[in-house]
Length: 306
Image (cartoon, rainbow, N blue to C red; front, side, top):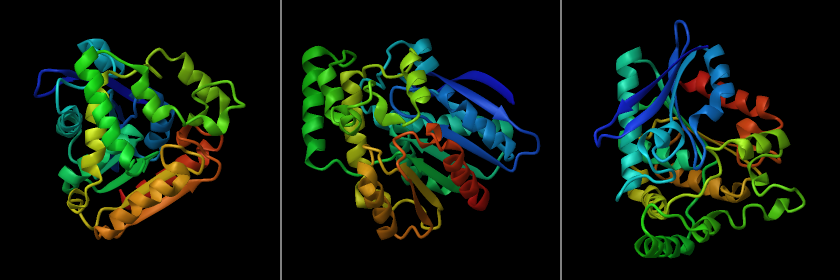
C-alpha cells in the first residue's frame, strides 16, 4: 500500500489532514468521509481492499476530529457558525486538491454515519462531479426531536460556550442507541457485534469523545437541510447510490430510516438506488463479524458503477 499523508490548507485557513492511498494503474478514485467522534485511520483495512480492487483512495480527518483537530485546536468543533456547510466545503476542497495530484479518474464518494450526512449534502451541491456513491449507516429525518435538538443545542452553546461540551446533547442522539444491547458491557455495543471492533474503538483516544455544543447546532441544522425535498431533487437523476446499513443499526432505525431516505431519493427521480441491509448487523458494517461479506457488497457496487 503506497500511502502519503499531508495537510491541506482550505479556504478559511484551517489545515485538513488527508491520506492518499495509491495503486498502480487505478481504474477509479474513492474518497471516504468518516463519521462522528472517529477518524479516517479506522478505514485502513477497507482501503487496502479497495486498493486491491484497483482503486486509489483518499480520506481526510474532518475538522474537530483526528489529526485535523490535533493540528488546529478544538476537538469536536466545526466552526463558529454554519459549520455543516463548512465541512461540506472542506470535502470539495480536499477532493479538488487530490484530483489535481492524481488526475481525473472515475470518482466514487463514500460517507459513513455523520459522514453520510455530509456526503448527501455534497451530492446535492456537487453531484455532477460524482460517478457513484455509497452511503453507510445513514439515517432518516428525526422528526419533531430535530427542532427540539436545535433549540437545546443553541441554548447550551449560548449559556456554556460554543466549544464547551455537555453530555445532555450527546444523550439526545445516543441515549437510546444501546437499549437493545444492555446485556453487553460497553456503551458502544451498538456500533458492532464484533467485540474486538468495539474494544478497539474504546481504546482509541480519538474515538468516542464528547462533541462541542456548537457541533450539535451545526449537525442538526445540516440534517434539516439534507432532508428538504427541493435539495434532494438537486442530485443528478442518473447517479447510482448504494445505501448499506445493519438491521440492528439504531441510527437508521433498524432499516426504516434508511428506506425512508431511499424512498425520498426515488421520489426525486434518482433511478439507480439500492438498499442493502446487513442481517443482524449494527452501525459499522465494515467492522462487523461478517465484514468481508458487506465490504464485498460495497466493492461490487463500485466495480459495477464506478
